[in-house]
Structures are given as C-alpha cells and as structure tokens.
Image (spheres, rainbow, N blue to C red):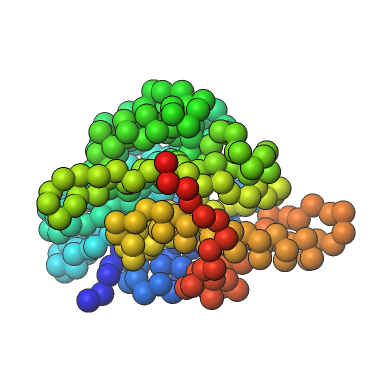
Length: 306
C-alpha cells in the first residue's frame, strides 16, 4: 500500500530548503510526496539576492479544493514547516482537520518554525495560532529549544526543565515531541549540542507508556539552510518505520543529518579553497550525493534513554 504525504512548504529553484529538502529523501525511502509550495523563490533568502512569489491562503485553498474535488484527499501524513502568514497557517489547520476527517489515522508532522537563539523571525501573531490551533492537531512536533519555550511559556535551563516542557507539549496534543537543538550542556563538552525527545505509545493492554531520550550531537561550524526541513522529513520517515521506538527513529534521523552535513562541509571547503569561507551556494546540502546514506544510514549518534 502506498504511503502518501502532503507536504506544504517553501520551494526554491536552486538549492535545498522546504519541499526541496523534504521531497527527495522521502521519495528515496518509498513515500509518495504531493507538494504544495508555500513560496516559490529563486533560492533561499541567505543569498545576496532572491526573487519569487508567495502563495496566499486563498490560493492554498484553491489548490486543496482541486485535490478534494477529484477525491484525492486521502493522505497518511501531512508535513509543514516555515510560514510567515497567520491566514495561511489557519488554512493549513483547516486542511489538517479535513484530512483527519477523511483518514482518522493521518499523522501530522509539524515543525513550528518561529525563531532561534532567543529571537523570533516570524510575526509574533503566529505564536497564538501555533499554541491554540496548530499544536493541538499535530501528532509529531520538532521545535528547537526557543520554540519549545515559546509554546509552553517555560524557560529551559536544565534537562529536567526540558522534560517538563515536553510533557506540557504532550498535554497540548502531540504524542511525539523532539526538541531538535538546545543550549543545554553536553557531558561530552561544548563541541556537542543536546537534542531531546519524548514519545507516548499505547501498549496492547491499552495502557500508555512514555519513552524519553537524549542525544549528544557533534556541532559543525557552518551555517546550513534546509537542515530543519530535512530533520522533520526524516523523523516522519523513521517514525513510520519504527512506530513505537523513538530511540531508533531519532538515531536514524540524526545519523542521516550527520552524513549529509559532513558531505556538504567537506565539499564546500574543497570548492572554496584554503582559508576561504564557503558561500551560500557552496553550502547547499549535498542531497543527491547522500542518497545511499538516506536509504540506509550508518548510525553515528546513539540516543540515551532517560
């Protein structure tokens, strides 16, 4: 049986971000991916210039309406990332609710992209929409530490704070929460960043159990774009293959990330030359070249059960 994903994300002509970051890896892992492009830009906005168009909430509705009229609106997964517009985000929620009406077992994977390092880079009006409408209909969410703090209203300074924040996020709706990066100190030193995850599963007898994990991930000294979109897509794929094992799903997700990033930075430094900072074009993710690692990642980072 085909497993079909509706992915509503950005599109770039050149490079890897949004749908360009998510589609190929999901297809390689056997998923059918239907993409709605929330923006169509020449390239990501980290370059000196970019041009393009932005899809409005009405235009999103028109596209979905075409899918619905042809009775093609049966999906197993829905995936969303960066959005700047309140009405667009509200339309996404309407679509999720309708798709869940058609298929109650649909899994909605949401990366609640709002900011990082203590600063929001989307309008503040999006926060209440995420809190009150999006997160309650999501099944899997992938906030960074700052986004988890925004959604819960709790400061995260310790691992205990992070676990409490994940529990609060569970109470809001999602059964799977992964804090993709944090400022927490790693026991391995400052060359590592800490990610944490929590998953509620229902056992055969109907009782619920919670699996919590921590991962210490090697840092890379470069700015990549599209890695968050790749992370959410890979978490979708690997939780599908390991539905009740967050540890295995996160190990494979993070290992894919590590392979892609390592290949990208090696290439970028080679092309840039000695003592030169690689350009945004040189730092585009080496996605096609990483096909083998996406399909069958050698595990580079092991998760610890909390």
